[in-house]
Image (cartoon, rainbow, N blue to C red; front, side, top):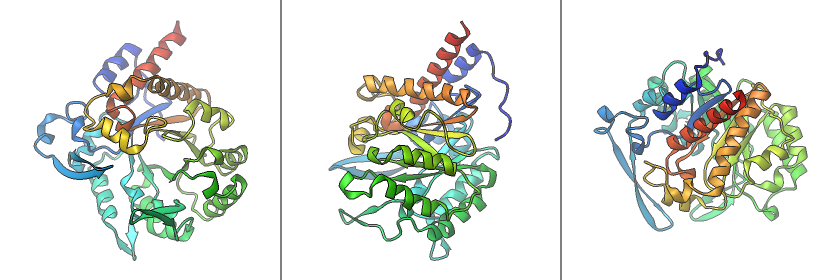
Length: 350
């Protein structure tokens, strides 16, 4: 990473944060979001002109309810990086960049992003679930994934083209594994052995961060293995995971990524399923009290703030990745955490 810019006085940073200018809030924190093209962010992140006249729509159905998603064009990513320091791209979760040795549709989408993003943009990419999910949904059922932990397939169809395309703009790759019941997963030690076989076969030219969504697999041996391998633990605020503050205790209160970066993903309220959180948050244009004004939302903000100061103490950089479903509106969630970080900075100066 380049040297951090000089940090301005707190009041100046507060004025910028009020306008959703979330770059350079803190020397050890970068704010970003999970995906970026939400038309509900017009007036916050994207200007009315020209994006209000360039909106596309798509339909989706969740639990029998129909929703319309409104999107600004990919070229809006240039405006995005005027407000945020990092962007997590999650469309890569759904298919690799190459299929049968030919560029997939995701290859061209990623190319479009890179054409419009500034040269100093920083991206986190989601690795394809094809290589890290034990089971996949097919026809309404979950079936065993034949490509699970296929290191060669991952490298040739995703990793190598991603590194070649992004170069220095690639700041990390996130491997997300689905929730597994105890009866459906290996024991924790066997899980570590399987993961070690996979990651030992991967190149060392990108930083990897792992998000396991099964609490019973987050053991001392797992965190010791992350430390040994230099892999990052993703501090995820998600449906069935323990609170971030508990994850901090479970990991031994230290960060493990080789490049001294940390990722926290603020995704859904705990104990709330994806579809329910989506329905509450849609159309993603403002905070929703049922999501943002709860005790656990308050704790989530405090936990993210605490991680920021843990990162400072350990000379790491925290990437705060906000999601609409956690709050109703990701930019406002990021802004709320930014103000809380500045509150703590002022408290420490008193």
